[in-house]
Image (tube, rainbow, N blue to C red; front, side, top):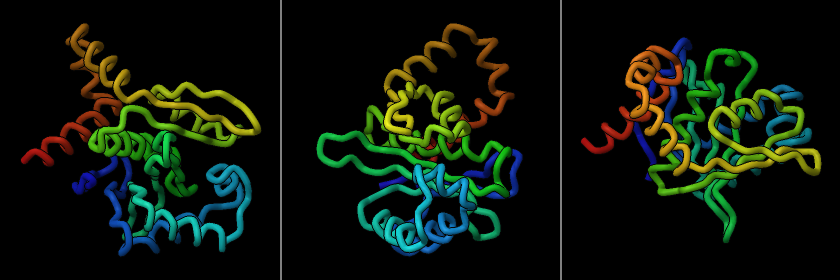
Length: 203
């Protein structure tokens, strides 16, 4: 079960929503195929051919991966993936944004929505892996509390969703003025998105 509401991304022309598993598979596949060589390298930690990406997208549709997409005019320009845990492993997250949609806070909105999905599923921790040269992804991960370690040419880390929630609530309780000012910032916008999603879910 996933959150089904549609959320407008601030300062951009598109919107963010969760894709259905089978019917909208081509949207994710086509997005990944459109990534330029550098973006494809960053996303998969190496250049991979089209056939691999097609198989990868098909597997996402079959294994219960949640895909949160940034959509412009019916075309997916950014995607956040929440892969279910395998055995004793942690659920894993991955992100990709096309060049035309960068520097518009799309990654932050996708990350916020994906964390909301993970919390709704009851996950306590997430795993994230990114290429060592993917500085934008590493910065975004740290923004959401990830502690990254570099090894074997890539950065891996975890996000503690329980600790993140406790810290955020404590920060708001400790400083009402800061909380009010934060409502005007983009970070607050992300939280209002998350709050509205839970509210819609409960209705």
